[in-house]
Image (cartoon, rainbow, N blue to C red):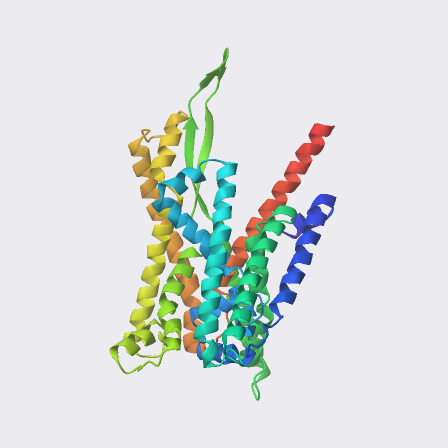
Amino acid sequence: MWKTVQNALKIKDIRNRLLFTFLMLIIIRLGSNLPIPGVNTEYFKNFFQSQAGTAVNFFNAMTGGSFEQMSVLALSITPYITAQIIMELMTIAIPKLEELQKEGEDGRKKMMEYTRYLTIVLSLVESIAMAVGFGNRGLLTHFGPKSVIVSVAAMTGGSAFLMWLGERITEKGVGNGISIVLLINIISSLPQDLASLWEKFIAVKDQAVAFSVLNAVIIAACILAMVVFVVLLCDAERHIPVQYSAKTQGRRMMGSQASVIPLKVNTAGVIPVIFASSLMSFPVVIAQFFKVDYSSVGGKILTMLNSSNWLNGDPLNVIGLIVYIALIILFAYFYTSITFNPLEVANNMKKSAGFIPGIRPGKPTSDYLTKILNYIIFLGATGLVIVAVIPVILTGRLGISRLSFTGNSLIIIVGVVLETLKMIESQMLVRNYKGFLSD
């Protein structure tokens, strides 16, 4: 990794791209600390303390703490990510969008345009819901039409600005700009997370030095083990061998070629965890707008959905954890099914005179790919469950509320870093080819 970065810094074009990305990230962090006029920043700080360990804190980590501080970038890049997911789902449901997606570069640009419009709509809806829903409960110091309009304009404008910055990073920087923005937001929470661990387990008053050292070693070992596990989960692939028959080109007979179909173990990435967390936390967040009797049936269901209660000793609340695990597995299968179509792959292979050794082309190939894919998805979903449940266990048993470096966030960090390094290596490879051709 470090060798790749060192080699990249020696190339002027890539060095300029890295510098541009770095400057854009500085601007993002400055905007994350610029508060919205007329907002009581203490309101959400108290709110997050009451929601320790829930998916709301994961959302705050994705915004780099901007949501907790209610800065102009409070919504961060999350409306854009949600818009991308919705557009992918709509592509499956709406044939016209599916045709548009297959039109090449022009279709891709049109889809991006629709995604931008949807991002603005989602930003407006989310900012209005927060300004109106939380405004009269203490979020706005002077609740009224003027303060609501200012808050909505600031949050919507901040989200649109981040979307624009992300696209500029993709164009003039390194890696996927949206992913880079998400990465820097999560990493910015690491110092606070480590500080809270230090105060809770290491710098404890009247604790023996040996215990402090032991706790530090255990924490470091757990973090390292989680990072290694997530790297393996994000990078693991199953290669399906493919053989292409010999072809005649002009008067020449071209020999048969061998290739592979790479199937990622974690094809869906962190999307299933985000879907499951959002679905579980949505009723809990909505309940904040109303007075809820937690002794009633509805109140008990809300308590069961709150992840901070799953391991509090009440057997009924464990049902919430079981539902959470089931949703992760369900969404892993669902999301992979809409992003990888075995029948389409089998048909394309058949048109290209390709086949899997020992498997007949056509439907037998499709059935074989489906069988392998289901097995791989189960392995990936199991890995996601392990990574997602560990923070819940730590929060429930050890009382840790800040865990940005584990679980969902860690999958994003590792995935984006690996993706960015691969992009840098590909740019270096292209430059070497250009240098060879110019000679």
